[in-house]
Length: 294
Ligand code: NAD
Image (cartoon, rainbow, N blue to C red; front, side, top):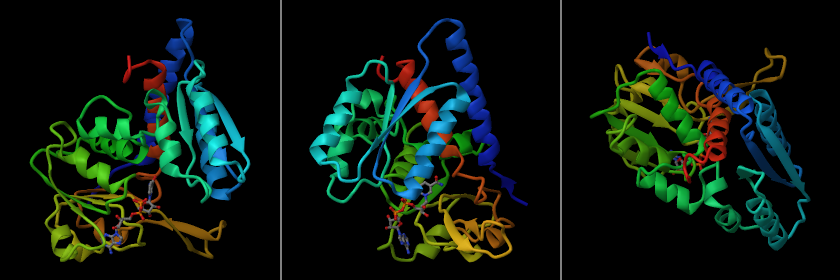
């Protein structure tokens, strides 16, 4: 039976390590890490995500500032607000919750964030540093996956890693990180996407399969090699009347049939998902301690 790659437990460990570090900083009279989150509009899901990030800051002893802006704000006014936070010496990390309203360019807003404060790791400067394997803020989901592999001592050197999906936030950075000369890394990487031919065959050749395409239970047992490590990034809500909430969460991988074949696998929920907030907190600590940009 596969080793369970436990994101819930690992994220709690990381948060507790961060909380201890904050304790030391406080004891020595240092500066408490401070994260600012910009939320534009009143999208329900975005409010929930930002709320969870702010709450996590409290849990580890960080300071946080939530900047709520009206959905009708102009692009210019939003860019001005980002600049104001860039210039505020008290704030260490800055995130702009996505999605932004349609009339605002995500690229312009992302590019406006000062790389030193870009704890989401989305700015061109930090993505470039990641590609060069320089110290940087690795974005939350890829960083979370690296930590899961590391803390579960998954061997990666010389392995064939297949990534399904090429989004800027998951598939593409994962393919770069798994190929770099580091641990986790040193894999031979194949990145696949919606135009890929013979995906089943390619997936079956993977020693490490990272699945981020956003299709419920797309990866079935016949697409997975015996003994493969399977990382499921997908999250989908499906109706389930047996649950109090009326829904349950499933991933991009058909867990029940894939788990018996895998040597290690992330569950959904409780796998990659819980790691993302821990990653954001970690990056904010790095920012406060000037570890990336001394
Ligand atoms: P996306 O929609 O931006 O990208 C999907 C990618 O999959 C694209 O590159 C596309 O080419 C590829 N794809 C689509 N259909 C395919 C097919 N049939 N075969 C091969 N490739 C195909 O998605 P995303 O933002 O990378 O997210 C992927 C999934 O991960 C979603 O379910 C999302 O909700 C989830 N997600 C979870 C977390 C987390 O914290 N666990 C974080 C980010 C995203």
